[in-house]
Image (tube, rainbow, N blue to C red):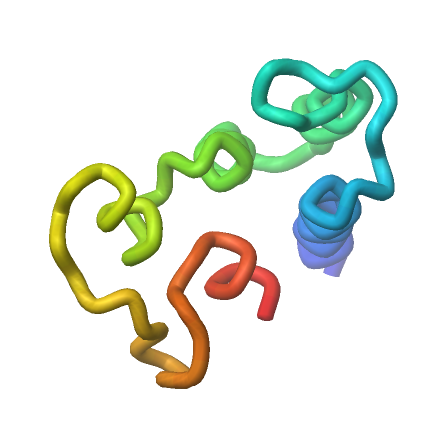
Length: 93
């Protein structure tokens, strides 16, 4: 239960950052320094924090990222078949 709250808190930070609600002190990736401090101070296993970091740095190999890197794949989400598979779509929607 406590871990679920912390994961939900991290997802909430990701959503706020994706929608531009947190915009002071942006770094070169468009993510605020305040968001990074909040994320790295969460009491979560390092593997989950690293995964969140990879999502925010667009490093997770979803179809949209693979296509941008020159790897030809379908762009449709395999789960809903309605939208492009991107990190925000896959992990938030």
